[in-house]
Amino acid sequence: MADLPSSRLRLYKPPFWSTGVDCFGPYTIKIGRRREKRWGIIYKCLTTRCVHLDLLPGLDTDSFLMSLRRFIARRGKPYEMWSDRGTNFRGGHRELQTAFENMEPDLKQQLAKQTINFCFNPPHSPHFGGAWEREIRAVKSALQVVLKDQVVAEEVLLTALIELEGILNSKPLGYASADIADPDPITPNLLLMGRHDSALPQAVYGPSGTLSTRRWRHSQVISDHFWKRFIQNYRPGLQLRQKWRKSTDNMAVGQAVMIVDANLPRGLWPVGTISQVFPGTDGIVRAAEVKVKDSTYVRPVTKLVELPKVPEDSDDTVSK
Image (cartoon, rainbow, N blue to C red):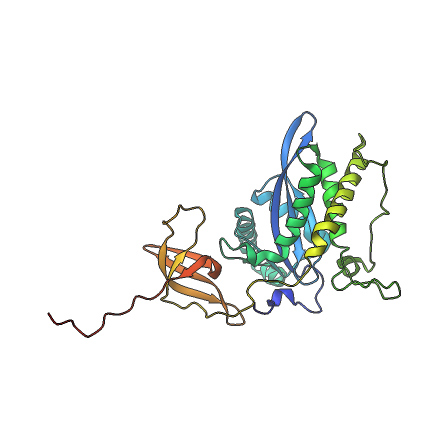
């Protein structure tokens, strides 16, 4: 496994300077007598591990751009944003680029330093966004256990998400000592607000923790269940990574490879030739462009299987 990329090591920069973004869901909510779907969106600071959660009415470009404006208004403008190649993220990137190009030259020159660099991971490579995918797993697994099939009001789901954001931002960034005399560990909330915990004291509503007809109590019970799941499942997983501990040779242009595609039936994975490689700043190739007949595909090297070279025919001929 290579060293961390530069986006994970933005020293002396404010939180969310380098941000990863992704969506998750959907979740069903009730508005009066009808039911609608909502999606969650997570913004993850790649350096300080701060988390920002929000709710989306849809996965279109407009919903993402409005969520981005809310995020910038509360957390500040990021220098770069990393995401997968979702249509809403790429559409938002095009919308911002078009709006910038249509500005007056003087205004464009003044705002040139205010642009956001959008960086997209290669297709079919969720491990490139492992920094925020792990947080999504913590949120989704807990909400799935807590909510199950029940339908809640939109404000209940939004309140629960924001309180879960506070829980995730309260986790220690390093080793937490059991000695009360030791200083408190650094948390994302400390970097964001200058204090360790901005949440209200936890309240217990009855011995059984049953749900109430009061919506604000309902949101508190959901947050309480999430905290229990967070302690039981997430905290034990904070350990050393077990993958890619040995270095391998980089793939090169001209190599014959087979593309791993779980959506295709057995025996029909495409075979092609690498036409271009994309090495990182450390020189390690993590993505490559593969030419298959008249089409080209960009895939991470974890989805490429190097095929053995066919030995050349020997010059010796067999006498008859």
